[in-house]
Length: 322
Image (cartoon, rainbow, N blue to C red):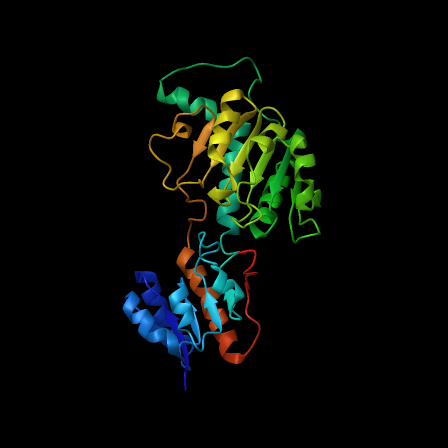
């Protein structure tokens, strides 16, 4: 019986292209493309591997399934339902393919705040020429400290970039114990509250997990250095937006660069849209050249490994969602 890989719906032009390319790259793999939920239900019982999002019903019918691949680096809440977490199958994802794009996005936020663009962009929109007192509003980066919350591939690349500007970079991470290039020190997550008062920039790159949901709330913002900048490109559910608005309005937080939000799209009526000192991008930090090609490369590599009985890359800790 052939080894079967099931591409779960919905399908996109990219995933249909992946199916054709995988059939050529791995001829011993039978690739099945399910265009509908009904087709997925009919095929799941004979699938050895699947790509996409499973439901509890599909998993219950999956008698042969040993590997599930997420084409996202951090799938949305609900992906790891209890039955999937308890199941012996292996889950993989595409983490690591966006490090350069997201690192550049974070650096853009940091440089914008350091040069007070969050003040000057609104002035430009009002055709207003208004210079602050000399040197006021800028951050001298060689004297600044950035705290990266979550030092995976994205956090490590961000540390490297920031260090080139002379920034002192520290971090917290649940798994990494050795500081990457450009990072002065790394600490366990339990040290976060003690480190927050040191940082001029707090940069959140952690995924949404049971441990990180609501990580940044009123109490955490109050622990930050008064006037420090907050940047979130990880997942929106890590940050309570109402508490962030309150911290911005009080001046406790000097500005925020946000690419992810508790609710997406961010409602048009949300006060963050017009809050002074806020830079918003619509969940695009990972965008850049070769996005789909990089996702395909991880899948192709793991398909070859799966067929050869070799360890898969980018294995996920299902209980912790990453």
